[in-house]
Length: 242
Image (tube, rainbow, N blue to C red):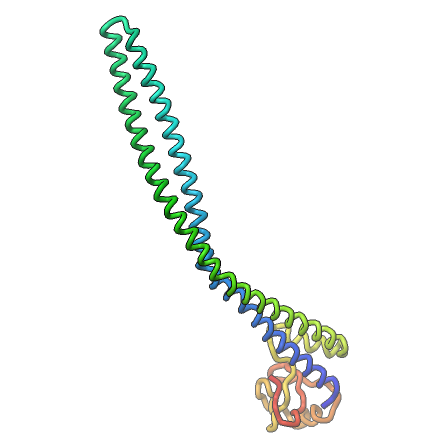
């Protein structure tokens, strides 16, 4: 086989290895996401509960302040009763006292309801935090292992790409450009062996005898009329490039 075809076939083998390595690297992120999903869901739940708890605590403090204001108002009205000058004024003060006390009872009841809600939310938050800690403890070693494997795969990919770049730089620029242009459309095969019965090893179109002879003995780069790949003579074992 001519030197240029041997080089292009070696380049193609490197490219196939690189594609496989990239696929391996791409498998790790989905695996990590699956492992992290339960812990992330619990983390989101804890964050939501904390936020909601803060809101309810603010509401409870607001209601308590309102109740304190009503208590202060009720005390002033009680003191005012000692200074009323007639029955009509006394009746008006009593009516206001009743209104303030009813409002105070409502505020106190609302505060109790909010306190109970806070207690239940705190219990739920504590349970979620414990569950999160357990989940994180389970996830961490599995995640670390996958991250380590992913980094090793990335290192292997980088080494392959570096080897590929160095190897490609030694190939004739025109031949390399032809090779690259074939792969530019997303194809994975740019060089294919002619089969033992004289067909393209990629699309299996029959190659004219004259072209077969040129492929077997010539130095010229010949491409398949059917699929456009670069045609190479069969290897000694008769295998075709894939």
